[in-house]
Image 1 (cartoon, one colour):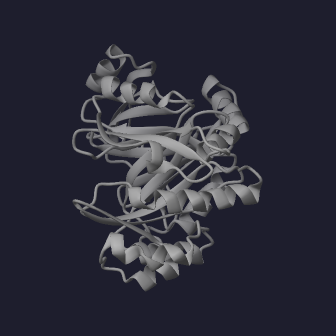
Image 2 (cartoon, rainbow, N blue to C red):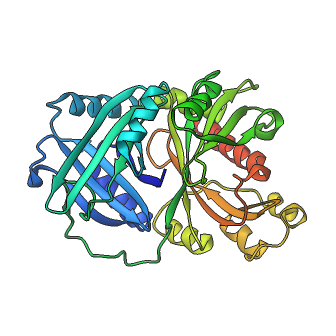
Image 3 (cartoon, rainbow, N blue to C red):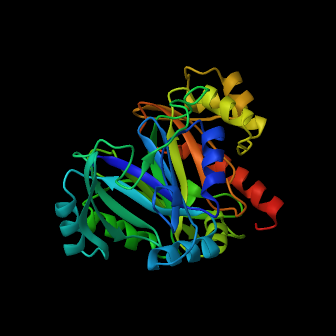
Length: 362
């Protein structure tokens, strides 16, 4: 595994979604395909920030099986992630290993090429209607993939860089399926178990969930998998599964070197973040210790902090970025810690529950 190649979204209106992520997340448009480039059915905008790529795809006219799939996907799930593409050094080897160890193949390895070189891709199924496309692009120098044209947009965003890479991608699965999918990643992709959060680790007075984190051997690709747990009221995972119509990608964590500037920039562009009560910051220094950002600054921006044996991290979560209470984002700044903010779980999930209550879904 060389890293996340791209996060591919199926959306109702790719042009408007691209404008949102470019404006609010500081991403740079780098490539496009659509009717003007010979793609009569599908429109896709590719945005980049550092090594991270988002591909925003919508259907113009569903004339093929894939176009019909995209149209059905948006109708059923709303805007959501359809593909967590993974860059690998050898697609044939990755696909062969995965399918020989239980993965369902969706697309066998095939090469596409243009004047910029060639790319080999293959795809397997994972939870819900999500897929992993293996991408081998060492022989390609184009803007994204063959068939995409470079955009005519400015070469760089006007504001500061908001994030530089994808830290991890979180999936929500149905009750009782978390261990099945953990085993899938262990067996079919050779991942190992990195973290586990169960019982009181992720519980409030009203709701609970369980989570296990799988990762490749270098911790370059990290996938936490969540499932709901029994509680007095509906958990955030139950709400997601209800509104998304099944399992899928819940949130994407974006890595930044300056979370304060990132959050301030995103807020100014209209991004809404979960709120944290002042009481959280009254005792923060006692268990999170000193960070390079003063507690008063963390309080002002509602940024969370956590510490483990390896260091500390700073994090904050957006509210859902579409009409349905499904996909959202995390901004994370790491200083040694390879954790996921265990010390913040209670404060985070209470904040989510407040939003659920406002929506009438708790």
